[in-house]
Length: 282
Ligand code: AMP
Image (cartoon, rainbow, N blue to C red; front, top):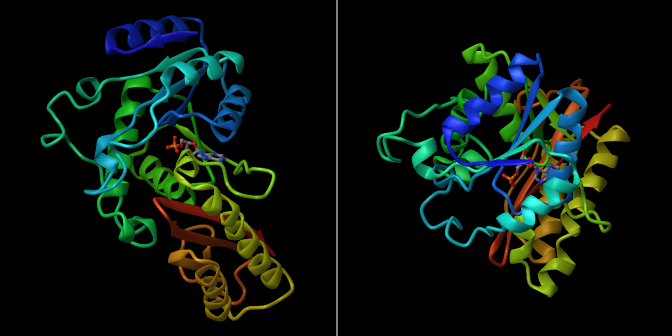
């Protein structure tokens, strides 16, 4: 497994693979890898001969006052973890490699519309940072396939839109959310939870599941379901940012006949901001 920091070494390795007609899959991450990330790598492996995992805590996707400084950086452990799942390369660029003209002068990529609600409205500039860095990683690695997690539902839709809009020849694959045994979606940010908060956190998935069951059993008053779920979360002690039932395809407001819905939740709990979702196919 190669650990590569600079563009030249990256290009040489990519050329070598291309000479052998090997396909390349990319798994972009911010490191502090857990079983959710590993599942993305395993899925990537099913779609390409070569798998590149990128580890980069991207400053442009953190809003002012967010956890950029505190975000856990565990590269040595991440390397050991990736070695065990047969990764071909870890690309660990520096800020200078990814943003050669500096953060303030960087060409940025914006996907309008889809980024304006939900996480976009609670984290100003977040999705611009995500699309800007992912576009750069795509340009450097030129992957055939890219794997993202359903855990960040809005993010994978935004990336899909960017790729389609720019006509990039990259197959975007969305991997299912990996959960702890008690249902909590795995996340690097779970590390911010105190023991007491960690014990509360599975409630998010529980509330999503029970709203999902109500939808499956024919309930169609979406607003009522959203309010009930939001109420249950606030009563448990979460500060709710949003609970929303939307069309899975594009996050638009669904009508009664919509047969693929996504239930999205974002809450704050102590120092952590937690998001989760489930897709309900009727
Ligand atoms: P992050 O390092 O948190 O930016 O995440 C990198 C990638 O891993 C993103 O595509 C996430 O959606 C995905 N991911 C994060 N948590 C999970 C999870 N619990 N299950 C599956 N994928 C995940």
